[in-house]
Image (cartoon, rainbow, N blue to C red; front, side):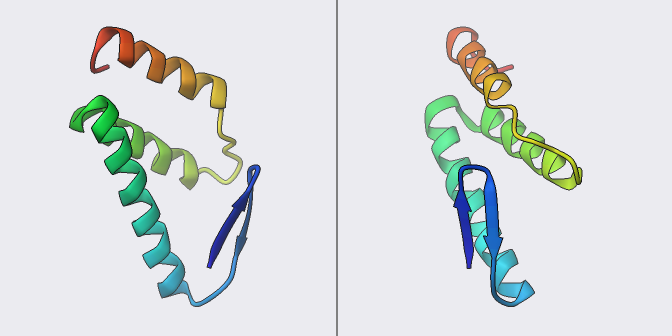
Length: 78
């Protein structure tokens, strides 16, 4: 089980189940971004999120993300 609450995460369960839930969540978010911004932008944002997650000290920069999404909305694909 993956539970998120304001930036903190609680993980419980087997490794394989956590990986399956992670993949399902990423797929769902990707679909939403793709509907709003197209396939290329969805792929870029998912790739960036995965790269950030691989860094032990990464924190989500909400302002940077919102700025990038606004630029895409105004100007098309990055």
